[in-house]
Image 1 (cartoon, each protein chain N blue to C red):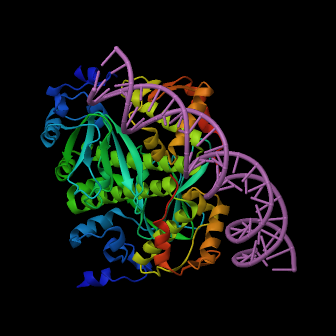
Image 2 (image 1 turned 90 degrees about the vertical axis):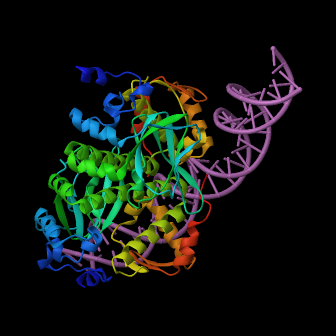
Image 3 (image 1 turned 180 degrees about the horizontal axis):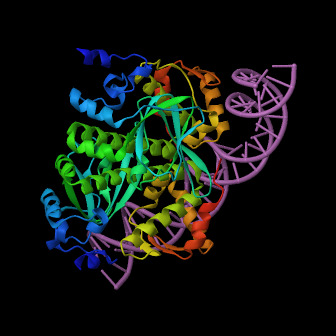
Length: 250
Length: 250
DNA sequence: CGGGTGTTTGATCCTTTTCAAACGCGGTGG
DNA sequence: CCACCGCGTTTGAAAAGGATCAAACACCCG
């Protein structure tokens, strides 16, 4: 069956010709639900040609009117919220198959910036039309709700991390999370390339970039990881996981 | 018109007889959308009698199967996530008109605990039926999506707070947030009673309870607030707001 | 080869945690 | 009504963890 082929875990390198979901090998990431071919066609009809962004380009900015949600088709993104006092914090990193823009639904304007950290592509899903279609395809509606809920759960995890963990534990959690997400996309879970700067990691983890760098050095000294700038090799996943089960402040 | 009466801002003390949404003065908080009487009746049909919880009682626990979402009808709740290492953190406080349980949609099991901090009542909304109804009442669907999105935005705000602010700024942000939410419910924005302990505030803000207590004392010394245990009076909202515009780490 | 950017590392300072003790409010039982 | 007890709160002194500032370094790109 073609479905089992689609679900085989292989790295994704979508071809140009596969703009439509029906033929896009990514749909097990962004739309992992059983749909009839007719239903899939209707979803395809929503989604135009993928939009390309160069590294550093903004997909949207805080305050932009909200029209669509996006799926990362290729590349890597960060989202940043800006606080009242001008400070900005990285709210998350999005990789292939993950969604962007869900924050904009509530006020019909985006509440954060989305920036490509490498040359990327996104599929746009016009939201008004998605809502209409969701009414007609229950599985799609259900999937969309789970998606939003997953985002809420993810944020709870980050709050937990920021509220209770020490610097090294935060970094360990971050690395393990990346590892797992890379693995789910068919990439190595132990060797990967960071797309973000130390500063961006620090911002995401609520740490100064110097602290992030020191934590990396410490891990390296302990034989947990091999670090060379943005090249990361996790040498001992188990011990890294155990590093999380430790105290924390409070 | 009865609508304008409903929308007048007055403290809420729902009567027993007002279990149904159509007659419940809370619906401008939980369901602030224009619906025909017929539509409202269909929503009413979803929602049974409110469930009562005594102080300290759990509405649901992490791991419980997800069946329904809830609206606080009276009282005050906290939600807590437990980390892998057994530590727990308060993820949020919910007051009248606010929703609980949205985290459970993604995995069909709750991912946090919800505890009543005082004697409370909630309306249960069976989720499967809500999804069906949402397909048939576009305004309801739209409202529900905004609700989930608002939760995501709220969480982003907390992440920002935890990642970038100093102890006193976190507490100021917390107090101003409570102030605003009380005001929206017709209560005083400057004088209120905290339903949670210092420990719970600290857990929510990523601080030790001692730090919270010290920050309160400092605010009091500066004439920003008058604190007597859980009785809080905000003496200078403007200066408190300005306290937020300050540095922060990083 | 040179400049810009991102990273590492050191020394110091500051914030917050930790541990501990005292306090005060609210409840219970004498 | 008062004494007592438990829990939550306040406060102090010491310690730890990170931030800050600054300098040196390494990589990438033109």
